Image (cartoon, rainbow, N blue to C red):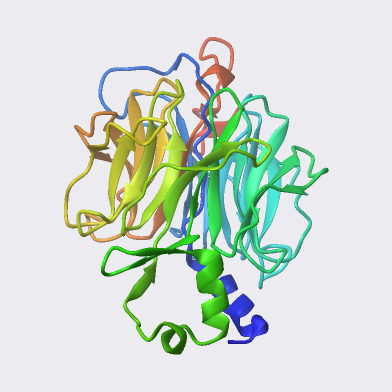
Length: 358
């Protein structure tokens, strides 16, 4: 396989991967309310107007407000810790690539901060707001990068032939979890490092190994925020993806197909104490913690197409918030300490519907 063809294939794979980030800044949720939907603001991306745009809604599904209006794809919104800005991935600068943009919470003042026309996905703000982690194919393979919040000082943190993506910061900003396809599992439960497999791909892996019973399976890894001290947290022949740290740092939510379909699980930061939160024959993905850690927003197609749901952190009381006939994806909760209901109103009542009054 030529290096050019391999890059094209990886680019196509990147364009199909779900993207997003759950900001993990521990804070009391001023919106805490009775009921699972409770209070709060959730951003997400939706196809309901014909192409993917960024929307806001209250955590009970009320006061839907569109932030972006552009024919290009806008996805994967993630909040700054102070709630004043949203970073997202978009194709508006180049229809054949994605870059990271930042805008005000009103949708104004858009700025391209990654400024590299390739595949730039999964922006995730550090808890102190100074940096943004993301993944990119700028070096020919998908790796995790970090940059200052203004787009400067872009540094690659991972360097593996495997596909590294979806970074998520620990609440103290010291570590980053991500998913990686750097390990290959064989059906007989043997495994091989992706560096070995990458070489074998170039030489026609089936002929080199004399077998075709293998599969690339993403696993969850954690590393220090400078890319050092890499540790694998999950180790099984299934797909473990979409890692998201809880606000207090005690749990990691992720998605796994180990039960036969995509379900949401939680585990301790060392990979132990595994708990299955959803268990059905549908696809449940993209977990995002509420600021108080009591609820988890996620995407499910259990009603026939992807909708945004919210459930309690123990998996009980799943509630469909969007109930749209078009795809709703990539939920992200507004940080709880960014909004004071006594002196600020984000989705304020107005004559034509909810008004942005931040």
